[in-house]
Each structure stands twice: as C-alpha cells, then as structure tokens.
Image (cartoon, one colour):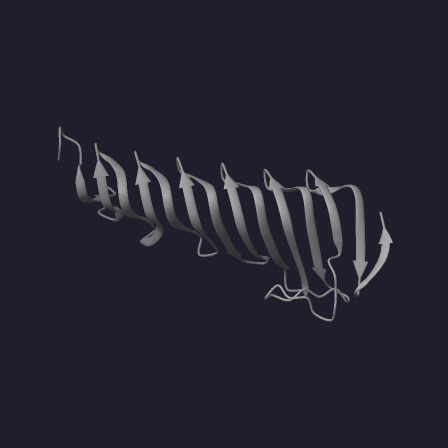
Length: 183
C-alpha cells in the first residue's frame, strides 16, 4: 500500500471472496501484468494501464469468443485475431480501432451447420468491407481452401471496390475458374 492505495503485486476480491484480479497495481488501479476473472474463469490475461486493458493481451467471452492482440484504453486496437465459435464460426485477423475491424484484414466464416464458407481479404472501416477487397464463397462449386491455396483453379467470387459493406462500382465475378460476368 502506498498512500492508502494498492501498489505492487496483489489480489482483488469480490465481497463474497471470489478473485476478480491477480496481478500488479499502481495507485490502486490495475497496472502492468495481470489476470482478471469472471465467474471463476480467466477472462483476460495481459497488460493493464491505469485500470484499463492496454498493450498485448488475450480476452475470453462466454467460452465462444477469444481475442488475442493489442488493446488501448480497454478496447481492441492495433493488430489482433478474433476467434468465435457458435452457430457461425468466425476468424478475423487484422487491424482494429475502437473495438471494430478497421484497416487491412482477413475474415473467414462458416455459416451455421451448412457447408457455406465465406472469406474476405481486404480493407475494413467500422466492421464493414470498404475499398478494394476480394470475396470468396464456397458453396455450389466455389472452393477456397483453409490453407489459402487455390483448389481446382477456382478464382475469387467477387473482386472490386466496396463501400459500407456492399459492392461499389466495377466488379468482376468469377465462377469455376472462368471469368463469367462483369458487373
């Protein structure tokens, strides 16, 4: 304790004696390396600054979502990878700003229990496709392998510009390795 505040290594508990946080403190706030807990399970492991997640860390939410990457003032910011498993399976690797996908990234999704897979490689702004990007879809003949190699000479489904998550302007659409139409 320094001036009545936790300082150095310590543990924070709920009123019922359940551990909330174990790690370093500075001026009574989480600061430095530490682990936070939610319902008795690890919810965040990483760096803190002035009580907020700041720096490299890993966060778990509801046993379905995990984010490994950088935080600034408690929000996903910088490079990071999000994994989500539920009805839809999602993986996003790329740049974040204010808890949203912003900048270059790769998004891979499996839709429900179907055999539909969608992948996007390009730019994001506030979680939406923006600017130049490539969209792949595997269903009914479109194939894009998990190791990011083309199979059976199949090309991307849509290549072009995006605005607010929708195609914008000139697009080329491909099917089964052939240039099939231009939008």
